[in-house]
Image (cartoon, rainbow, N blue to C red; front, side):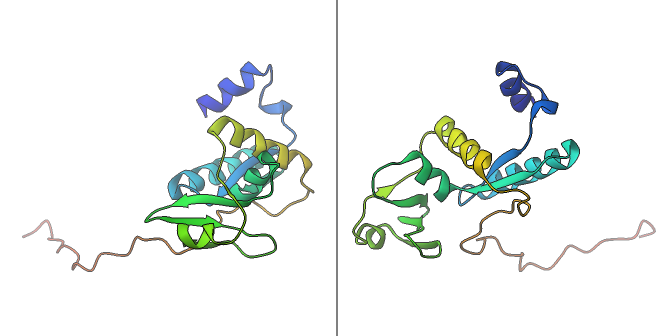
Length: 155
């Protein structure tokens, strides 16, 4: 929140000057996306303004003029892609490169934030509340170990 206040101050604005909030919804860093979406939704609720979720794919496409497939790096030599008219999916880098169009990756963070802001500015409102864009299930799983035994204070 201090960084957001700093950015607003640099622009000569305050919280009450905002008419909507744009946030990235992914794909991207799991924890970062969840924090960004939660912060945007909380601020929008407190300020009584709309929060607009923008996918990384849409932000890439706004920042890239050439013909492309928006792509976000993923672990294990894979990428998240959203080819024209298709649902987002996780594929190997090799498979994505065979689709016939150049892959366009997210711009540097400042440019990515600008693209998200531009998309939020032109979005229709009211809009659904932003939610993280999950393309695959999380890698985390509950522990298979037995839970620890809790002893009573009397023992």
